[in-house]
Amino acid sequence: MHIRLLAVGDRQPNWVDDAFSAYTGRFPREWKFRLDTIATVRRNKNDRSRQAMAAEGEQILAKVDSAEQVILLDERGKQLSSKSLAERLSGWQADGRDLCFVIGGPDGVSDACRERADFTLSLSQLTLPHGMARVLFAEQMYRAWSLQTGHPYHRE
Image 1 (cartoon, rainbow, N blue to C red):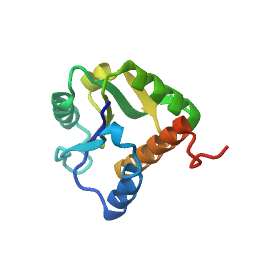
Image 2: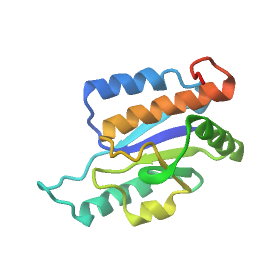
Image 3: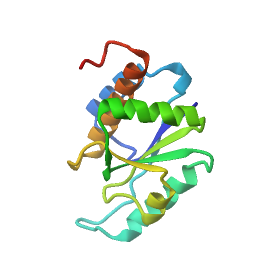
């Protein structure tokens, strides 16, 4: 099974790249994890137009394979404990389809992206900067794997 993160925003601060790499480097090889990025559509100051979100949405959907299971990371999604995420991940793995996690642009994702998602997961009710969301995603995926395998990283 392949797991990938498809994220809008191609430039992140060094600390984000470093922390993200620290966790994804621990992922099991069988996940064949990869990060795919989409450039953020240029916006004018205080521009919250749906045009930018729609353009990013089209790019996201163009990169999603029809056979992939899509998990949208969004603050309005379902919140899970780390243990519940590990159980959900086991279920997704048992399904056999590749997984594509999606982080949208600064204004979120288009309705078309929401409709394509098989599941919407909230990492937090807090609004997170995209770099922080990437790092938190990577850490929680590593934690989920550690729970699945009995690795001592997770402590209760």
